[in-house]
Length: 232
Length: 126
Image 1 (cartoon, rainbow over the protein chains, first blue to last red):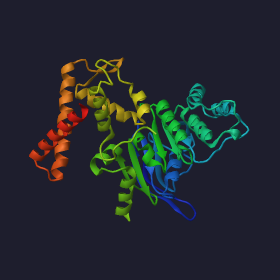
Image 2 (tube, rainbow over the protein chains, first blue to last red):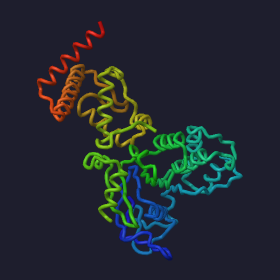
Image 3 (cartoon, one colour):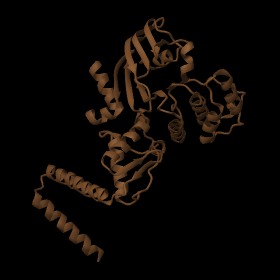
Image 4 (cartoon, each protein chain N blue to C red):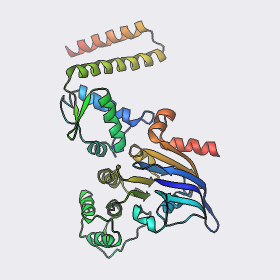
């Protein structure tokens, strides 16, 4: 379980998170939604142990997050951070040397499933195939927490579809929790079991998506708009 | 991407409706194995936990049976499927009547309307 206790984060000029307290349940696919600059990436990076709080605690299974807890978290960042002169195959092998929990066989299986040519150089991959490679590298790690920051952004519908199918095929919700940020929230709404709404560095709600449909009769986007209006 | 869902009704119930409908139409036969939870999740682009919930609900309705280690199957008890068909009929009628009432039609208007419609349809076919 991931727990935030009164967490604040201040960068030089900007308050990124303000007094966030939340417990995130395990075994679910959770959407993290909010407008640009609302603190989503900071929230994710704290779970990944890449950013430490100015105040408060972030814990995974009661252990403070740090580089040490990074072995529990696979983090897909918004940015591409691969060696472009590697082939897909070499990239997979490089990742296997970086992470003890990396399952090479699974990585190959996912790459196969997504129909990416394993011998292509990364720099020659289309944007869509780079997106697929990132997913494969993230899902091939045998870790309890998977974080995906904008995995669908800028990709065409076919690629988005194959990424969603890949995710559904290769995660194990009995052992894993997935947190996704995306601007295409309507598109992946059926995929999400819960959603966290965030605004100006504050967590507004953690809610079951089926409850939003049943009680509020709304899409997540409309629910988020409603929350934003109530807070404003 | 997957399929469209109505945003004002839980997806697990929409999947229950869809699968019931497929069974009644004979697209899924008695005794037939349903896709595994994961397969169904991938096919419909839906969260696996939502699919599990759908299967649990179908099981509670006794339309499907889960056999340990083998999967989930459409029931072979014909009477359960007849009940389901009746239930779907009643649901459809209820929806129809509610909407017609909202438009201000009386019960007689509705019955007349249906009779005329069905007669016209028969004449057009012959």
